[in-house]
Image (cartoon, rainbow, N blue to C red; front, top):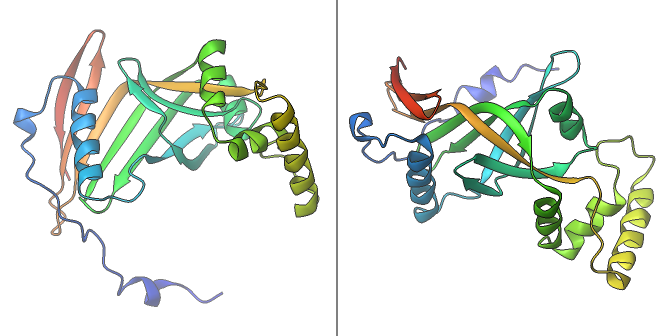
Length: 217
């Protein structure tokens, strides 16, 4: 295989336009600052600002990561949804800790969240499932996510069958569909600089309050 170095070197990075940021004026709670940064990313047209990387660890302590969508942000933390039978669901059940990474290149900003993970209630899980589009519900009902697949036709048949079941019984809910909440222990806000003089502000949980620390670039 030909190395990618020659192709990578000409590519530009950190081409976004970060707004002014003064860490000394940041709010006491990182959730409030996240809302400010997220809202700004939406306003300037960042594509899919709610996309995030979820990192977990498997039974051997090996890290695993994938991109999914933020479902909500409450006083409890950052919420996302997945089947409890999926690879990430199994990992979160065995090791209920996770990290989230948001990256908004349009504004040259990133947010990292680390913390413990808890499950939503049965009522919350069912409500979230029922709010999904019928296609997404059919996939969740008909697909044993992350398991080996024999052929594309096999998955199409299973999902089509699940869609027909939903047509007949729209109240059906996947028994494995689960909301998960990352309760933050630390949250880092990173703002880029073209000369690599990045700004980094880390919040650390102190029980009912937060402490902040500036970090070197």
